[in-house]
Amino acid sequence: PPPPPLSHLTPASAPSPPILGLSSAELDASQDMCAYCFDVVIHDMRPSLALSSDRWGEPLNGPVIPMDLQRFVDARIECPLFVTWCKKRRGHEHLSFDRASTELRGCIGCLDPIPIEKMGEYAIKSGMQDKRFPPLHYDELPLVICKISLLCRFQSCVDADDWVIGVHGVLIRFPDPHNGALLSATYLPEVPLEHNMSKEVAIRELIRKAGYRGPIDGAMMSTLQVTRYESAKASLTYDEYVHLYNPSLR
Image (tube, rainbow, N blue to C red; front, side, top):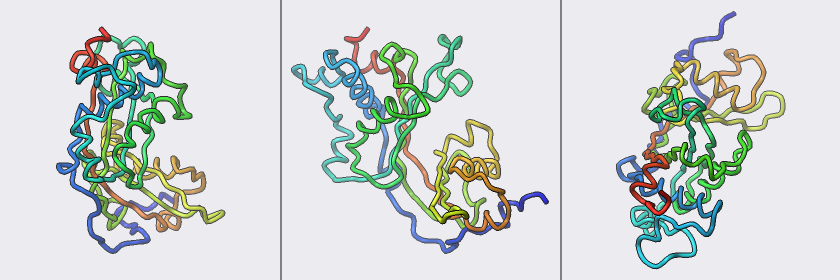
């Protein structure tokens, strides 16, 4: 029989708890933060090269946290975050950065609140340690765009349909029916939109992404815990980084 529609499925935790986390306006992601991610990755690849933060004074020994990130550090702000690297596809080098012309090059983040200054660590992890891809190479940087997502306003969904494509990220958790291990997976808000997914397709793809290979039936779907969230986003291409932040690399 066909699987039940999402609207008929209620997560295991149906109550509506308070929204957790700061608003996207309060987090205020910026291109300065993306420039910092470029600084960190370039310093890891070529420690002798100048960084964007060098323009603020004498040459430094490593990346300096930008002022708009430092204010969150000073306030001891913690939030979940992701750093994503995308690259222009072969044959699309002269096109603008859009979904059709780019491909994922690395994306790693943390769904638990962490000190926001750890953004640099996740820039390295996503660029160099995402096991789906080889480490990002210095020669690739001119074709790369950096994207950061600061996650906020987490709230349990009433059901698996209780989120808006393009507005909410979606996080699913459920027990593996074979061993009881907790499985989870998430899509950032832009992913279902960019891939033209319906909510139903997105949820089912997340179940597979979490590692579940059994039948997706009503019994299995009834165990889902679904959480929605929003994100503050910023992006910066390498060309913009060089032009706006680090002209010494021209």
